[in-house]
Image (cartoon, rainbow, N blue to C red; front, side, top):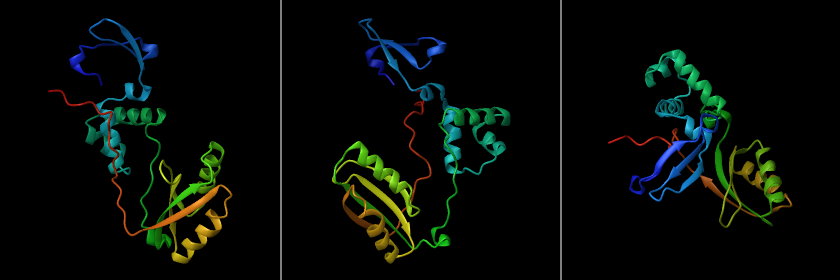
Length: 198
């Protein structure tokens, strides 16, 4: 987290405030840094658990324990801790889209008439209420939102855009891009994992 070249000294303030770290540089001036509690409380084994569950959320506790090298009871307690800290937020199933009658997916760029908190919140809530919407991204740039939709066909997509988006008073402009194919990496990058020691 801090460069060794600066000759920094680190220590935890106390056990009640374990996310607050004092550090000093060569000049012996002390500064307080507040680190998110979840970062301070996760270790290498926690990250291995998260990695394994992202790759296969169907693992039994016994299988997971064997992968990370823990007793099943210890592994279960760590999983409970990750849920309690809201690090592990849930599991979901990957479903073949054609089996649900989904024949077409698209990304719809949405530009609002004004970029105010009220309009952003209103559109965000509206988009998430629509059954065709897979994901909503609030973005910077020429548009304000990218909306991932899954529909039956081109007619359904046209009706969705005209009836559920362009009729909204906060929407100025939309632009639709068809999705021919997509793949998702099942595991998120981990920038908190401790670096291996030399």
